[in-house]
Length: 101
Image (cartoon, rainbow, N blue to C red; front, side, top):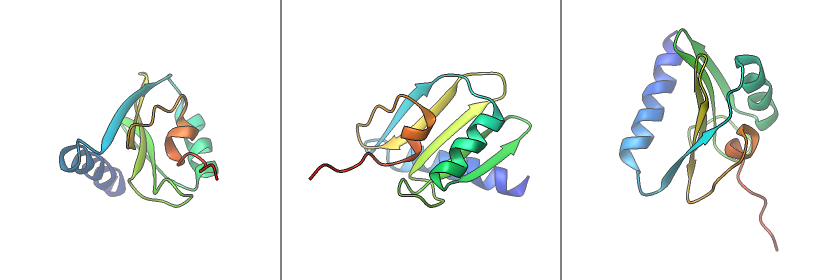
């Protein structure tokens, strides 16, 4: 429970601290199990409490708060990503796009 509260505080801090750098994107509704699976694939940290569940990554395969997906229980999910990206799903929200050379 303590980790969930800290996770939500970090999400809020990012939203208040860098609004020009972050984009909020609405995603489809997903279950906690689906978000946990995507989170594991992205290398992030999954968190869940009575209000919802989510995942945070550093956008590069490790835990962090640069790329975040949060779902309120029974509702659609929201992603917060750095820059002007518009991810279409939770996995693309939790990972930085591949750089083209």
